[in-house]
Length: 127
Image 1 (cartoon, helix red, strand yellow):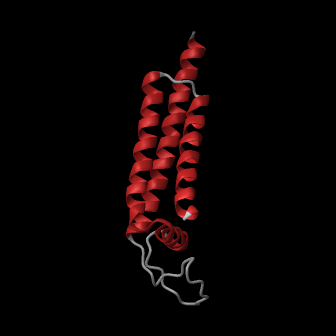
Image 2 (image 1 turned 180 degrees about the vertical axis):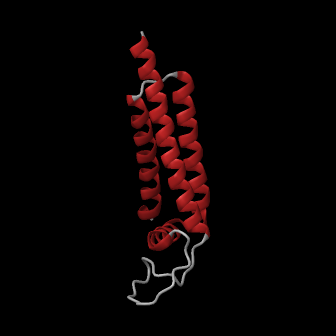
């Protein structure tokens, strides 16, 4: 009995840990997008400069990621990020409150994001 309760609490803690990791990644991407500067060295213009000042708060990686996301989705990336954040938040709350089996947590996330990727892929590359 005690082991079962301990494992349930451990599962909740792991879910909360992954939610915190996702939230930190979400904040990093959001800060990188908000501080995007087209003059930074990024994916769309690869130039080798020795004394290049990077204005993006996410650094070189944030500059590259924000450039790629703006090229793929434009300004709609803000709504897409918000949608992903809300979906993960709802899944985590559901798992914690309803005591869903832990193995289905990753399955639901994988299924959801693969569906979104498939829809976006067909919209972007079918036309």
